[in-house]
Image 1: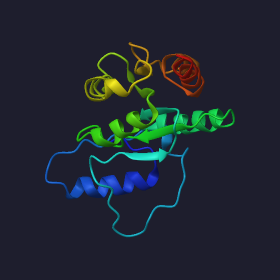
Image 2: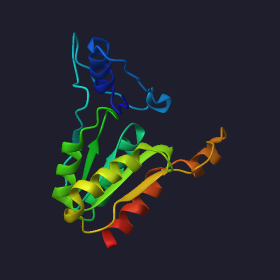
Image 3: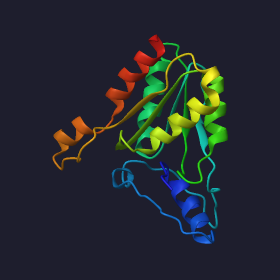
Image 4: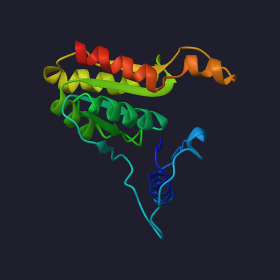
Length: 181
């Protein structure tokens, strides 16, 4: 589980507890105090393996999870001022992976950027890109692009960390390249 929103954290955690299989539940410590929202009271479940389109669009898709979803929403808002509509898909869980929602978004927008904070090599974004290439290639108007962390250790110093990790500035530049293709 790689959630981006507090309500998803609660719903996915409760669903994970009830699941009969082992579940790895990732928490992004940078989101602890950054993102706030009302969380439903009582039992609230988010189905495992179900992605969510958090912003609808027509010109390109950004597929991601965790903190990258928030950067994607910010990029989509900025490009919206220029008349470009970006769809943002939060995959929420790696396995099971909601291939259907991702492929539907790609078929709709015909351009896709896959982003995550894991390293580019062997990161889950490579699996997402491979599935898109395998099952939606004929819908693509541009190559699948990936934005991820530099292939190496993440430094502790905040200024160096910003150089290694993907961020809104890098994502915006990558989206502009993708849209210009």
